[in-house]
Image (cartoon, rainbow, N blue to C red; front, side):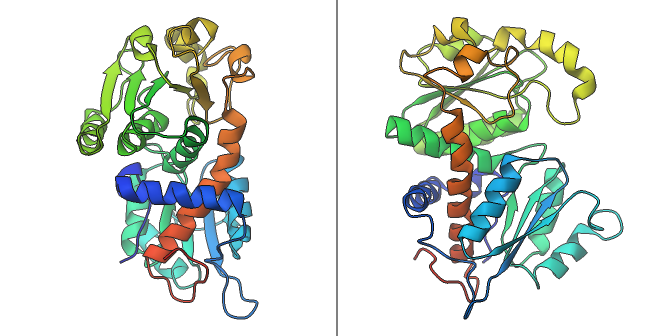
Length: 321
């Protein structure tokens, strides 16, 4: 059965741990797996489709696919007929005959689900309006590198809690057995369905979930503090209003006083210093944002290797057993 990665909970707790272990292995030995190497000197192609702009996702997937023996085929917005002249289903049926994996950064989660339903090769969510699961694999890898473990740690996210990062922190953190706290203003809290899914997963792993409007309560003793831009793509017209709305949820020195003394700080970037995070915090000793950015490469290489192996894609080499 073809395995896809569209939302954080597409990996079980054990599977998430496998991917993170493989990411650590690939970080230490970057060329130890080559799932996209083909017979002779052949190299399999991976389609990487961008409906939204990108820096880290584009570079990390392109470099990672090359490291794994493959060829990245970058398809930008407006470069294909996907979704307007040709249906998503028809596009999937064409791509599956030519590429080994489909990576797609897009808007609607429903589009990814339609692509996966019609594809016999793995489909990976490289960001949608609802979830950013690849970023969370990188975040968890980063936390584990610096804390030695994930289960039992408290991870707090402040800011726009109705966005894709908050959703993925809930689901991925709960899968890892973490205590996940999400804090934002009224009207900008996670969808109850996402919270329910996180609570269900937390019940399996020993983690917990807290959603609150109280930033100080969410920060109390936290081991990990995370945030994201207050103005996501497509919200530029709301910039002034959103900067005022989320001001009480900024990650700055005053906020960090409430976290554990050895708390670490994450931000998926791009960051706006002086708004969601202060310069002294993101550039300070508790910040792991550059390790976090680098780990997109290692986590996504592990994910692609793992998905290809679990999907039984023929002709791959160097995949995990």
